[in-house]
Amino acid sequence: MTLADEKQAFGTRLKEALRKAHLQTNSPTWIAREFNLRYHGDPVTAPAIRKWLEGRALPSQDKLRVLAMWLEVTPQWLRFGGPERKENRSHALAKQDAADYAVDAAWAVRKLELLNESHQKMVLEMVRALLRLEGKQ
Image 1 (cartoon, rainbow, N blue to C red):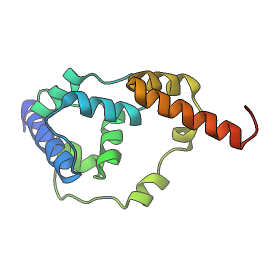
Image 2 (image 1 turned 135 degrees about the horizontal axis):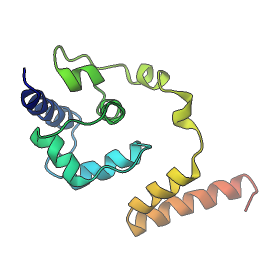
Image 3 (image 1 turned 180 degrees about the vertical axis):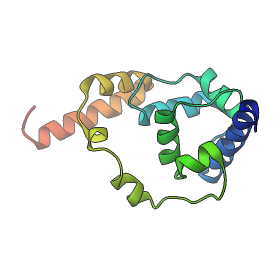
C-alpha cells in the first residue's frame, strides 16, 4: 500500500468514526474547534482537518491519539484499519498520562480564546462560581 493509499484510507476511517459518533463530518472548522478543545498542543487549523478528511495528509501520533480518544476508537484502527475495536471509555481514560490533567494556565487561556464571546463568558462565570464556593473571590 502506498502512502497516498494510506492517507486516503485514513480519511475514510476518520469520516466513518465521526459519523458513528454522530458528529459533523462536513465542517472542518467545527471539527478543528472541537479537536483543539481536547488537544494540548498548538491548535490545528481547518485546512489541516480538511486534508485529513480528504485523505491528503496524516496527523502526527499525538494528534491521532487525541482523535481516537475523542471518537472512542483505537488509534491503531484509526491509523491502519483492520478490525474496529472500541476501547472501553473508562479504560481509555485510565490509560491517560497524569500529565494530561496537570494545570496549565497558558493552555487554558489559549483554549478560552478559541471560544466565541458568549462561551467565553460562560466559562468565566463558571470560574467565578467555583471561586465563590471555595471562598477565594
